[in-house]
Amino acid sequence: MRILSGIQPSGTLHLGNYFGMMKPAIELQEKGDAYYFIADLHALTTVRDPAALRTHGRELAVDFLACGLDPARSVFFRQSDVPTVTELAWILSTVTPMGLLERCHSFKDKTARGLGATHGLFAYPVLMAADILIYDSDLVPVGRDQKQHLEVTRDIAIKINEIYGDVFKLPEPSIREDTAIVPGLDGSKMSKSYDNTIEIFAPENVLKKKVMGIKTDSTPVESPKPVENSSILGLYKLVASESDYRSMESDFLNGGVGYGDLKKRLFGGIWEFFAGQRARREEILADSGLVNRVLDEGAIKARETADKVMTRVRKAVGL
Ligand code: ADP
Ligand code: TRP
Image (tube, rainbow, N blue to C red; front, side):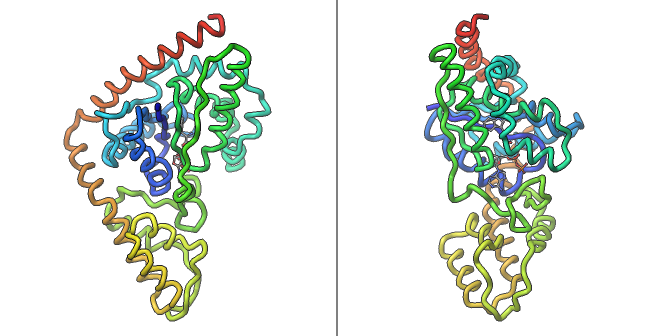
């Protein structure tokens, strides 16, 4: 089974990215042949600073490795190191109905937030379909916000297969319901775009300040506190043991413990959860050539697989 996912180097890794996409992707490495990449071509739709794009890409690669991506098991590469993916995106775009892209939430959300309505932003799902189809992927682990893009990918693959015969496998999304939407500091979905993120590798004082800044209501210390939609509880569930989680939940239900104390406990949980990853990250950073070695090797393997599929596609469409 081929498993594939990508993540854009458009910011710093946060808890939403980790629990929504990275952790499931890392766990799936055991289940098949995994291909994971840094989606730098996609990030060009929003990042216009070349130095920032490079820095984010490098940091994201370090973080992914620190979190457990095993390059001996999985192929890890930069999207732009396989330029044929843009050729496939063009071929796919020739059968993609405008209406299919017009319905995509992500384009509507991004333009509503003030991003320029560029062709790249509009055609983003077509490039994503190419990413997935060019490696004959079976399973794509992502957070729930990417579900629609997987539907678009399947629609495009079906269209190509209808016109040209059996060219593509139909990929399935893998969305873990327990971490489909990780809440942010303000209770809405954690996202760079909402400025409500908790960065997992932030220094201790910065992380603590972030967690202490989680928005709460004005329930007095002694009163029971609402558990529905609580970011504190929602996040604690991800990092704490079952019994620690239950004990915090009963403190919410019974009252007597203030939000400040609950947040301190949450901070402790997050800090401890990532201790191993932080140590591994330091080791990776100390080996200056490691990341480039891994990504360069990954690129060679990724190109090999992509080239095979592209030979099949070119033949099928008549090029
Ligand atoms: P952001 O919303 O911060 O810009 P991205 O769109 O770059 O994050 O998301 C990268 C990956 O992380 C995607 O697979 C996405 O589904 C997942 N992801 C991001 N935020 C969350 C969240 N709050 N909950 C679950 N998954 C998330
Ligand atoms: N669009 C994805 C995101 O914003 C990143 C991505 C690009 C991706 N290509 C992909 C994810 C292919 C899975 C498969 O998170």
